[in-house]
Length: 434
Image (cartoon, rainbow, N blue to C red; front, top):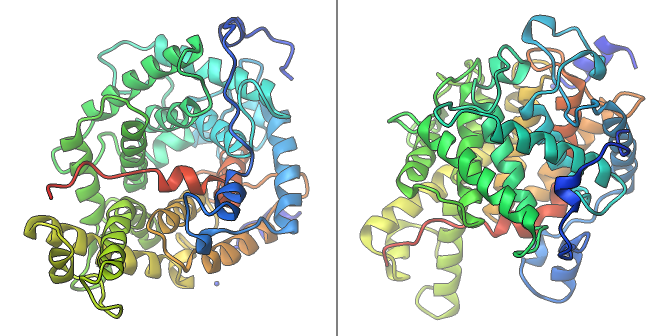
């Protein structure tokens, strides 16, 4: 496909390498059923049926070709790289050095598609990448806020200097669910996750943003908040005060009174800011929604009542919590709605990795908040993505993060988000006061 056409259409292997650390344990590996969303829907457990969405056939075909491309793009050291900011025109995945951020997001895509270090068609790729990431963490000085000595990569310059540790923490958290409690691999992963969490928390500014922000630093801060909240869910040592600061920073990027986004840390691009707000407020919005639904079921509120601070108090929340969760709900709904507008979705005006990340944030946030409009969002975004996919199965950007590996991995995460509904809904808030 012509590159120019690709860019502007979006506008209006290494299996032979040894991995002794991963395979030495004699403990059995817990296999998570592929497509657990099907089980929970049809058995009536876990999630609301309104959130269920079967992957369209065209999307499945797209994902198949993209995973094959990703597998071939892996470097011999087990990682993947986005390349340097100074060489954005380099599209050969083997002509660039591996970096942790790109490796982490790519491995998350493979994991979401049913591949672990032990099972799945691309298990060898995941095993190699996992070993690469663990070594990156283990070889980093404790006083460093990142896990790599590389500087000037596309993700670092455009998202933030510490994006490597942020995305690695997210991957290690996701991986934890696929490992047995007694598996030696799980102990190693948990130890390294705690290291990553400590580094992230060390880099949180007083206002809740993450130090070392790049061109669109709000995205780094948004993913940092995501990493902390999911790591806490996995049992990592998370400072809830710092997590709350991170969430407050993201919610503060949307003014619910003027209904406008603050884009100071988002390169002036509303999409980058508002998608982080939608994701960062999603868990609190879900709590508010569920609290009102429960009160209606118990007869404490009329069926027509909306989510308000007054109604949340009637449902049993303290005044402080009611104000907090009502505000989060209002911000979340407004941000998610605005993030779906065509003029906002166009982002910088052409397709870059930042746009892909913003769509991912929006979609995950809609699921986490149980927004019943998420299917419409998925139809819209999946149509956009399929229309700009390269013939070889990859995607690439036109500005900033142009890396085909980074963009392809993020596109896969977006298109397969319906496979992770259980995991997204498992993310909770710190204990309420009531």
